[in-house]
Length: 80
Image (cartoon, rainbow, N blue to C red):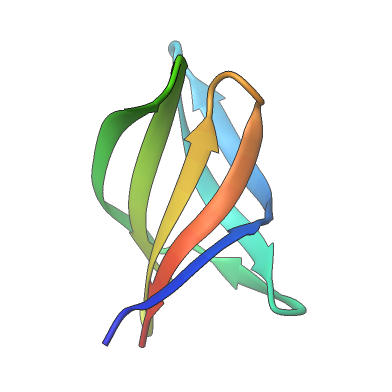
């Protein structure tokens, strides 16, 4: 069952050819290494574009989001 979180996080990301993807994030006192990005999508919150990444570390599934206006990352959901 997914847990709704909505907390700011620190993220390490790789930038390549005008795109980027998260490779790790810090949450709950630990660093989560991302093994795979399962799905990505965009949404809007007011004027801000939000990039969503559904990622896994091989054990859990997480939704991490990047706000292109504030340049901040959040974890929205965690499962597993």
